[in-house]
Length: 214
Image (cartoon, rainbow, N blue to C red; front, top):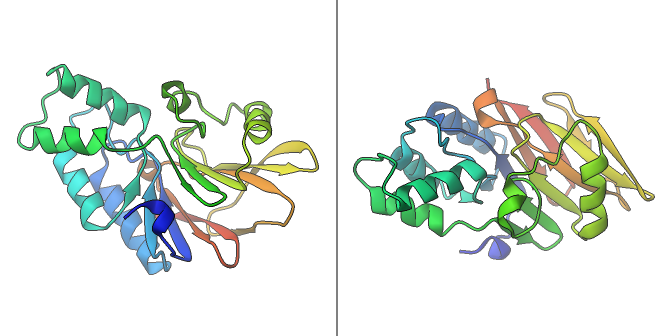
């Protein structure tokens, strides 16, 4: 099933597991309890500098029907596997096939899900949206038409708001819910699973909730 075919109301969001199987499993459990009907991982479920349980992480994502986009660490491991310079043990071909098939972005009507910049190009998942100001976010708002972009990579859970031609960088407290206002656009940086972060978006009520899992 393609993400565009999903009709779920509540979408659970994760990003940047960086090989932490335990935290990823916990995030899935917490999001399900929060009512998530679909789950999306925004990339970097692997870490190219660690000896990750690659097959176990993939099994966890598949067993829970998690949609995923490719992150820069996942891309790096893909290259290493193709060069036979990364030891993955049993299931190497399955791991490589899984990463190869991942898209860089996924789109659901006016929502975009990406590891970082919402463009289908290699540089996109290496450049962080959050650079401590709204400068880069401003360019994304001007060059795309998405109502909301959900992203990872930057690890810190912040969001950017586009209102009346101006972009602002803002924060949301853990456990709090942000109402998506009409006439505004947003970029939501979910934060890192390995740091205890995930989020829930309700498409009907248009509310975004920051969730701590630790």
